[in-house]
Amino acid sequence: MDRLGAALLGLFAVVGGESVVPDRQTYMADVAAGTVKYQLPEATGPIEESVEAFHIMRRQVSQAEYAACVRDGGCKALDKPWHESRDGRRPVVGLSWLDAKAYAQWLSASTGNRHRLPRYAEWLHAVGPDYVMDQPLADAAANPASEQAQQRLLRFTKQGSSGALSLAENVWEWTDTCFAGAADGACGAHIAAGRHLSALSDLERDPVAGAASAGAVPTHVGLRLVRE
Image (cartoon, rainbow, N blue to C red; front, side, top):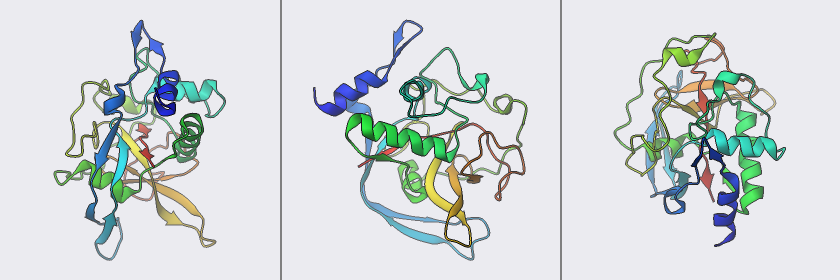
């Protein structure tokens, strides 16, 4: 077993008596190069972006995987208990962009392979041509999960054209694409991609309605990573 395979085995725990170690052969989806056209809110016109071939996680990072990062000191614990379930296979949610970046750095150090957040164009390309953006959904500050169907188990999810699972479903995913930059060039908000686009503050955990510059904000935000 190579270093990546050994590291992956070490990252996953046994939850509720059932192993959540992934099938290493299906851990990553290979996405071919292509061109993506999209439009950001308030943009003057569509953006066309070339995307090189890349490898993206077939599913979102799970609660068990994120918990391993917390135990190792690489990630902050979740703020709210209802973000965690007894089934560690469910996607981890309630993360800020900085939380997502910290997990990527920890996973890179743990496996020896660089992992990073996808660019928004890469995420769109992984979804495929059938993606249709929904209108923003109403948010519930007390318990946003009540406004959505329960998050699906990782093994019971729809597959996109790239082979990635659960893209544009119940969990939004952080990207590395800046939505709004400050005058000094720093980026204050990044795109969270899902059934509709949202722009969230990098520092924000569980923002409430009206906290972003583009529509209502989904609070169940997680991540999946690109491996280089």
